[in-house]
Amino acid sequence: MTKQEELKKEILEKTKEYYELVHKPQQTKKFVKGKSRVNYAGRVFDEKEMEYLVDSSLDFWLTYGEYSKKFEKELAEFLGVRWAFLVNSGSSANLLAFYTLTSPLLKDRQVKRGDEVITVAAGFPTTVAPIVQYGAVPVFVDMELTYFNIDVTQLEKALSVKTKAVMIAHTLGNPFNIKAVKEFCDKHNLWLIEDNCDALGSTYDGKPTGTWGDIGTSSFYPPHHMTMGEGGATYTDNPLLKKIMLSMRDWGRDCWCESGVDNTCGARFSQSFGSLPKGYDHKYVYSHFGFNLKVSDMQAAVGVAQLEKFPTFVEIRKKNFKRLYEGLKDINELDLVETQPHSDPSWFGFLMTLNDKATFTRNEISEFLEKNNIQTRNLFAGNMLRHPMFDSLEQGKDYRVIGELLNTDKIMNDSFWIGLYPGMGDDAIDYMVEKIREFIVK
Ligand SMILES: Cc1ncc(COP(=O)(O)O)c(C=O)c1O
Image (cartoon, rainbow, N blue to C red):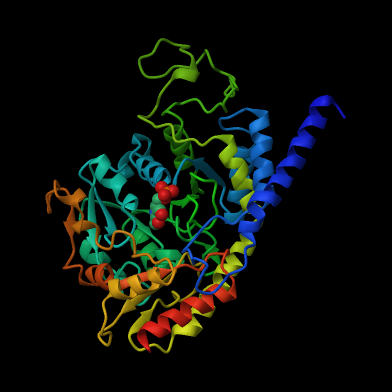
């Protein structure tokens, strides 16, 4: 063993020791009823994440490197797609996915400014933000209140000659009606972006969500199904979208050399582009107005360790969902989210909605649970249109609304969710059931 190898081994052994001293007690802490806080989500990790992270930091490559490559390959394999690309957040993944559709290389299917994109208003704002940021027009349709996803009966009403794409999320892991949405998109030659940030590991008809449409996106922010701190990914099976996506992620360049590598194309100084002089260095030729959305290799290292555990994470999420559902299903005042037919969700959270029988408000039950150390969440923005960010936009011009979005408002007013992440054991789940029942059934 060289001195370098010896030192590395020692550092990694110390890292493991550090994990066991500092983090393991937290990660394996017993739940104490009434004392322990039941967070809705959190990082679940062991010494592996820390070892890979430290290993990567010792390499000191810093930018996109070996761990990034490994992560992209393994994520693509897990999803059964040809390509996955790492980016620095789920929001960046949505930005990249949408901007990919704006490339002139897509010819008559390019999304141009003023073109319309069908979406929903109940959810996370960065599913919609890229549409507005680019200058396209989001067209909002309502939600349904059984699976808490897009109401597919509204899709045809939302269609116009300007419609180019549908961009929506699978709510808290529960797939939207993919069959109906996909048929609609295929019939009208529309792109489909699946925001899969809250649904990694879910399947529909046995095929992973995020791989049904043209592009899928993921988030690896700590509360999500797996984490690398900040991080995200886009994935696709379409070679042209892949080419555009890579260009847009990496500054808009035409060149596809990995960092630190030159002349992958073998024609670095002999090609012609635009009105540039013949042979202008391909490394600095730009085919798009791009971004730089890459992660550091250290983030990817954490992701590689998380992916190894991922199937177990998904199983625990499913188990926890079942336990919550069984514990709460007879409560008359609450409508529990139902599993989308033909699907097997990798749940992000457990969504409940107060119905007409409830004699309390959503905030009252949320406050009661919070006081009892149970973290609660609303369905993110509730109704995005009611947020200040829309104040400067004009309905009919900058965005369109189909109908009155009554179900979206219902979700904004009466829905809330609690966690079921793999850091929760049966005792934490049972405690949440007990407290909800205590508040409602008394
Ligand atoms: C559906 C959905 N899309 C996108 C995002 C954004 O992900 P990130 O926080 O990694 O930017 C989130 C965040 O929680 C989300 O829930």
